[in-house]
Image (tube, rainbow, N blue to C red; front, side, top):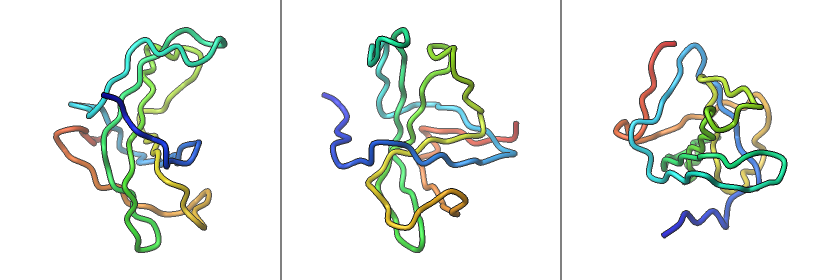
Length: 111
């Protein structure tokens, strides 16, 4: 059984929750040793279901987390949450959004 992202935009919405940070407790999916490019060694990715609200509308979405211990060449701030969802009209850098998530999947806390 896999994760169907077929209706998703081919990119992420990066949401800063600074000065807070997050960590996964129990993601819905974990994919280990994914070799998706020749440019990097295999990586591990976690996903947790969430809802992203923008301009009064809620969109089903996934919190996407590339595990930093398997992605040494890229810095991933602990206050940055990456969201995968369908294309959203008029969303842009600086847009305000809200994320609803299962607290059993994700912990948000002060840094």
